[in-house]
Length: 151
Image (tube, rainbow, N blue to C red; front, side, top):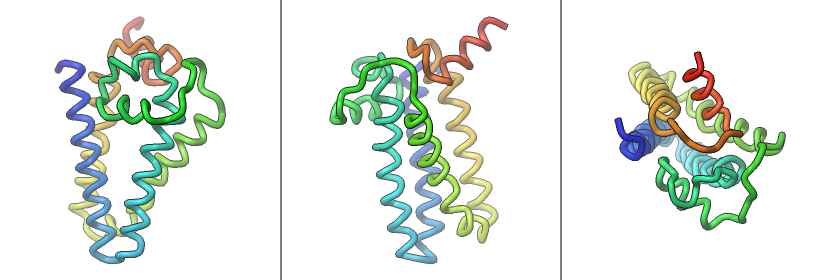
């Protein structure tokens, strides 16, 4: 799979499982559904700023496509090591994205299984294909790729 195509696949998988999460929540509670939609929007911005804005290939060669474009509208950040604040920004929001809808997803086991199957697929396609060969030596995904290639 080519890197750019893999980036599109990751985006589609991500929007699919997050969409399932929104649907599971909003059909039971409009309030929590809208809150989850807001969390999704904030998460994309926070993760893009905390993580993606430091990536050296974000401007021209980002295989995650829209994330690279999003970082162009965020304050400029110098590529380099990620700070504890960058890690907290990424982990807290990503946990919220995945944990908030679980109560509602668990009510429908098929949606629950589909959500996690799509999420797992996105988490596998990203590092294995879309991120392969990325020059960001500070990114944990790139470090996993280097370790895998050297063994």
